[in-house]
Structures are given as structure tokens and as C-alpha cells.
Image (cartoon, rainbow, N blue to C red):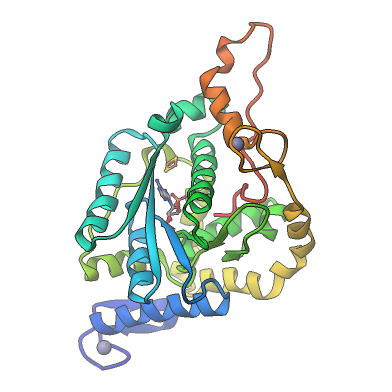
Length: 326
Ligand code: AMP
Ligand code: FES
Ligand code: ZN
Ligand code: ZN
């Protein structure tokens, strides 16, 4: 196996590009894919202050490294979700990355600041853990960006993630979510700009990037995500990709080029001004935002209410940041 660029011994094949790369040229490939995504979608501007949401996993740590290498001013944000040892270990990887490079890592811990963790939030909301988790993360990312005066929040969603989310949204023709499934969402109504600079890199590439750059990351999957639909879509697309390399890329980028604009109206409708949450001051659809409703639920769980009152699941969507947009 020879490197496509220098003909030296290759360390990885990227079948989607019909190419093999040596270490040096693979790292260059990753940097090029990120800068191309950033430019094509006008994600970032020179001088922007960026907050990268770091989970301690390969994608977000690779992203932090790649953005720093590209010369951006980037701080990290780790959200402690309280998922037992998994969260403890994830936080340690994020902290180690930051302290080895003398970077600023902000931390917010659900249990310490809001009195609940993801398992308790999911029980109180009567929703799957990933819903309570996703809602909490989105809210805390937005809030940290607002309070810290950042221009954009960057997340480590990669091509595999985005294609799997798209697959799920297409299966159910979720117009609102399809409208928002773009790699950059402009700042609107108190929500910061959201960017996904890794959309041109597959999961396997971000893992290889970390190994080659000596970045230690959390290898375990979240124990609460077991059996969730998103993982099923990912596995289905992995099967298709194995048979037709490049299928995932064509599916996702074909959508962006040829179909995303068809949902533009839905996106504009969703972006139409929500109000301000009476509790936290953040953007809200009703009087109180979905996150603050979840917090209320955890303080007064439905079981503690009058027996005749049937507990309804909490709506865990706050527009425009909500839904399955990755
Ligand atoms: P996931 O939703 O777990 O697939 O993660 C998608 C992206 O969200 C990651 O690449 C990170 O950028 C961000 N993220 C996930 N979990 C956390 C966390 N606990 N703290 C901060 N950012 C996170
Ligand atoms: Fe959120 Fe697993 S990381 S439920
Ligand atoms: Zn080479
Ligand atoms: Zn609120």
C-alpha cells in the first residue's frame, strides 16, 4: 500500500477517496478536509472566538486540535453528564488534553449546578436518556457561548454522524429537522452560531488522526446509548458504505447540494423569534425553555404528584436548537 501523494509506505486507506496515505499526508488530508468544510460553508471567520464542545471522545478532541492547528482561537467546554464511570473517564481525557497544551477548558456539571444527572433527568422526563442528554447539552453549549462571548460553538459531528441523522430524518420525512440539518446554523434569537467542521471526515479518520497525533481519548461508547435508533442507522449505513465506498458522502453532500434548500421555508419558520425563558433568560418557545422545564421535573418528579394526575412526558425540544439535528 503506497501513499497517493509521495509513494512512501501508507498507514491508512481512505476508500471513499480511493486513496492511501502515509502519516504526513494523512494528517494533511484531515487538515484539508476541515479547511474545505469551513470555507465551503463559511463556518468561521478569522478572529472568531470559538467554543468547542469536547466530550473526551476522538471527534471533539481531534476537532480542537485541528482548529488550533489552523490558527483559531479556541477554548473547550466539557459538560459533566453524570453517567457514572463513563463520564468520569471522559472528563479526564478532556482535562488531560487541555492541561498538556495549556488550553482553557470550561466545565459545567449537571449534578452540581442543576441537581440532576442524565439518568435522573431521563427518569423524570419519561424520555430515553439520549433525549434528556441532548437537550441538556444543547442548552449548556448555548448558555456557555452566550456568557463567554463566543462567536461560534463547534461540535465534533463527523460524516458518519451526519449521514446517520439524515437517514433517520429522511425515513420519517421530518421536515423541520431536515431544514436544520446543515453544517452551519447562523446565530439567531439568542442562539450562537453552530458549526460542524468535521463533516468531511469519517469516524475512522478522526480515530486515526488522534492515534497519529498521540491524543488519548475515551474509546468506550456511552452506556446509556445502547440500542438507540441512531446507532442502528449508523450500522445500516456502514453496511452500505462497505459495499459502495463513498455512498455515505454522496448521500449527505447530495442532500446539502440538491435537497436542503427545499426545506428552507421550514427553517425560516422555525427561526421565527422565540421568546425569553422566564427562568434562565435564554431563548424559549413558551414562557419557560425546555431545559428549565426538565430541571423543574427533576425537582418535582411526576411520581410525587397527585395520584390521579397522569404524568405526561416532557417535550424535550427547544426550537431552533432542538430536534435530531445531530
Ligand atoms: P454525541 O451527541 O455524543 O454524538 O456528540 C456529538 C458532539 O457533541 C461531540 O463531538 C462533542 O462536540 C459534543 N459533546 C458530546 N458530549 C459532550 C459533553 N459531555 N461535553 C461537551 N461536549 C459534548
Ligand atoms: Fe448522552 Fe449517552 S452521552 S445519553
Ligand atoms: Zn505520503
Ligand atoms: Zn430556561
